[in-house]
Image (cartoon, rainbow, N blue to C red):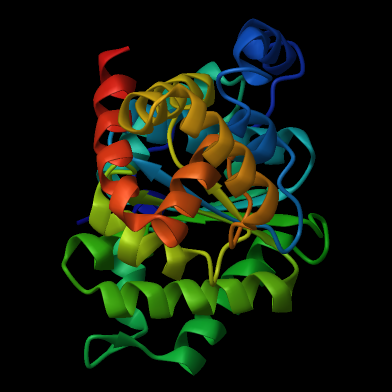
Length: 292
């Protein structure tokens, strides 16, 4: 596979007249159904955000919002996509009012092929910590451009590549290294997993692990729809009175391992406190979310 940096580029840097217009056009969704837009727009040093997605368009919108906002803020941006995803991102970045070619020429944007970078630090099916941190540190230094862009953001999907290949242990080890990188280099990191938020195994095994090395979770695209689905599912499974009591008690006394929407925190708390109820509520929530 050819590296994105060696392929013809479309454009990716802020256009002062176009970018604000697009933000205004999206503003009706920003504070209600999709508050993740604000989270990605304002991501700061040491933030480590994880997105769960199944819809490629959701991935596209989230990554491009993260990158375009960074460029608009005068920050350096590192993107580590597969070649196929980079091709999908380019038109959306242009729609975000960004000039890809200019940003790359100025050194503000660095694009690295995920499939080519990953083998450079993998050994015996696990990431080699010193090699990874050395390579990643070099990439961050290049993105800073001799301190022209002291604030840097990084989005990549190498952890997801390992996850999709069935190597969950290596995937989480790499996430631990990215969390270390975020703190040592004081950069914002955003990663995306092709993962179903309504899968019981994800809630049982993966979300607790992700809570160990992330600061924020974006579980679904539409938070308002998730809130309705979880509330309706809980009422159907345990009854309206018990649902109200259970929701109040869990949200008041249970602290999720990382930042997430309240409805997602409720699902997480159910799994930890009343697992006999959680499977049924999770399945029904998924059905209602998708149906609406």
